[in-house]
Length: 163
Image 1 (cartoon, one colour):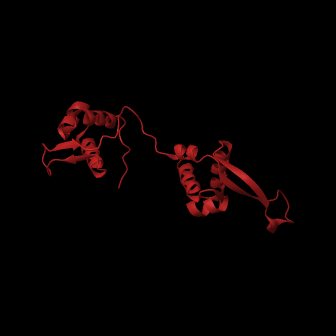
Image 2 (cartoon, helix red, strand yellow; image 1 turned 180 degrees about the vertical axis):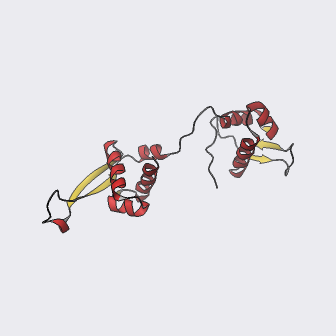
């Protein structure tokens, strides 16, 4: 699945037409693995193979002639949805987000007591929300620091990424 995401991002970045060699060169993934992933994308209707060119270098060689397929991105939204990170639901992070939305002003202790989360998880979650500008703290350090929700972004917890 990881190779699917890497190749999918490269295909979206190409913005239209691309070949197997372009994707393999850009991603650093072996041609055979790239071909397998591109074929799977083609079967799912995400990309289309638009024309095949016989490679003239091996014209007199025995066996099946080598073909070069140019691909076209057919369904950008489906590919973006497929490679987007998936968030599990009803986790400790979801419970912490519900508490934060309900209370608006809270402490880390509130989150630990009301959700049953570990101190490390609470610390990580509040730091990540602070880095994204969703919450702010009232003071620096100390066990009783109050945090305030400043950006109401909805019922679903935000996707947290490392900066």
